[in-house]
Amino acid sequence: MSRIFSGVQPTGNLHLGNYLGAIRNWVALQDQYEGNLFCVVDLHAITVWQDPAALRANTREVAAAMLAAGIDPKRNIIFNQSQVSAHAELAWVFNCVARMGWLNRMTQFKEKAGKNRENASVGLFAYPNLMAADILAYRATHVPVGDDQKQHLELARDIAIKFNNDFGTDFFPVVEPLIFGTATRVMSLKDGTSKMSKSDPSDNSRITMTDDADTIAKKIRRAKTDPEALPETKDGLKGRPEAENLYGIYAALSDRTVDDVVTEFAGGQFSAFKQSLADLAIETLAPMQNEMRRLMNEPDHVDAILADGAVRAAAIARPVIEDVHDIVGFLRPKHGMRGSS
Image (tube, rainbow, N blue to C red; front, side, top):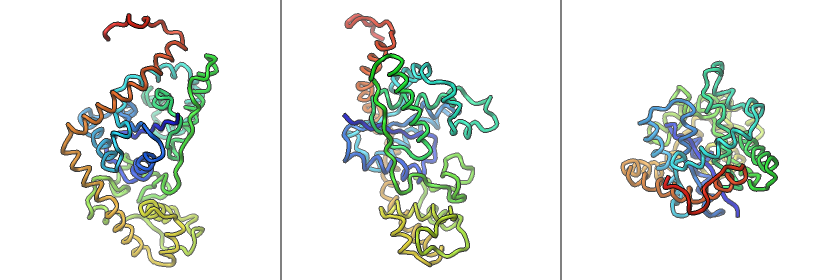
């Protein structure tokens, strides 16, 4: 049986890149796969220090965004990672399967740790092992990923293969990526060579899912461009990262190809294109933003959905973890003899 798993971190300032690169695609997957698991990965979030109150609020915000975007909590499982202990439990097993050399090659750790590598948390270094556990605790077969996560997914595949080889089994599936086309990687509005990020010090670099219409329009008007006229063909975007990024955003928001957008605005001025993009972004995002705000004012309702999702997720993961215990050789009480814990 095919099963989808995907997650997003609750680190605040949920932005357009999160929506176009992940959440919107999850909505589309509902019609292709049943019983998908969509996770707010709060264990991943604490690989760098988080304010506890902010972490709780951000977890609800991400869950509200999923619901507002159209992910049905009855057809899918929406939960936060820390409520299902299988993630952390399997991650430890994978810490003992993965090799240091594999983790040392992870480019995201190098980017996030920067020059302070020795001061980075062990959790940040071992992050990909937890990501593998997120997926394989449910024996998921497919994972929607952006370009920046492909290396981590390759590691998850390597861990599954090594576990199977080490223990002479074919227990874990070798997961396949689902990589979507337009706007899989939305770039900064201030620098078309850098990914749109929550951590960018400039709020003008991103459109957040809580921005009002005036703020969205202002940020798009101020987005970095170049002095050239808009291209006549898609090839004319080469070497123009800011223009290419804005065209990609327009195409994604309008469910069209970049070629179609280039044809529509060929030879025009950036000012007119930006106004059209701002109008499109406001029109597309407004219904979801309004629903997000409503849900954020009903935290008990959001919490109940996450709790229900956690129970359903744990019911899938627990038999997997018990089988892993048996495969690895952990001694467990026989059925009917387990303690209440």
